[in-house]
Length: 88
Image (cartoon, rainbow, N blue to C red; front, side, top):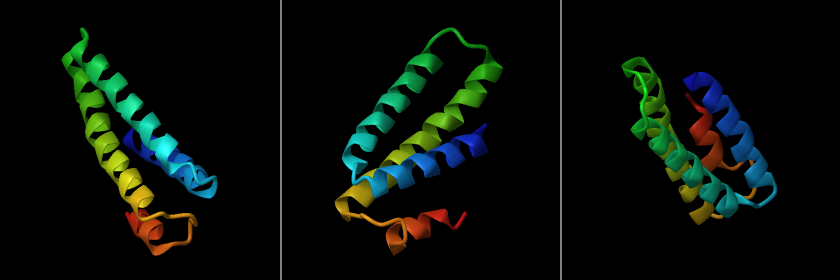
């Protein structure tokens, strides 16, 4: 589940960079994180919580990357600041 989420985030981030829309994507990331937080606060089984909690941690990390890319005014997917995030 985490790998699929990372692939999806990478695709969306590259689209946001190419369309110069990182600020809007940052807002969308915050909404997604809050939705996951609400989900984890609901009545979930222990196994379900163990699956959702890592998505929250990953989402916060990804959101912070989006924020840094926006502050750095990244406008090209070939800039070092973005490429360095793809090393893992």
